[in-house]
Image (cartoon, rainbow, N blue to C red):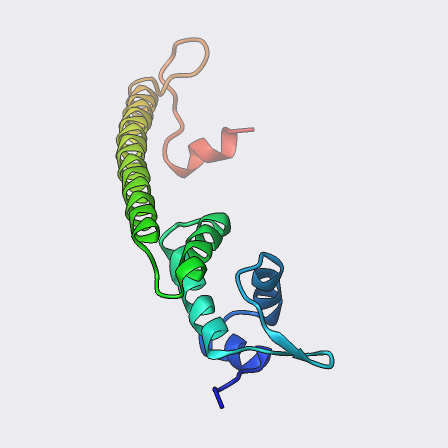
Length: 153
């Protein structure tokens, strides 16, 4: 007899919620049998859950994962069609990640530029305040240091 698993056992083993596992079942990624109201997961379901979680980490959608499972289920041993699809999905994902890395680099450069402009503007403001310690009539101010903060409203 093959080993079977409860939803709680799988949730604990893979550090996911039972709700997530039920969702994957709703998405037709897992196909547990039933004993009354209890779901009974097979070794195949366990492997499919593991592959689903791995696929998600790689950035595949649940629809893409399901498509790969369906191709696998057609032959019971995989197929050239499935392998070509998987290679295509890997290539697409790699291209998307490379674009994301380029986008991140651009955002970092823009942030760096904005930071430099802000620091320069602050420096200019500070220099102006040091050069112009005069009151409104153009006379030198007699207040310095902590006295100056007392006059600010």
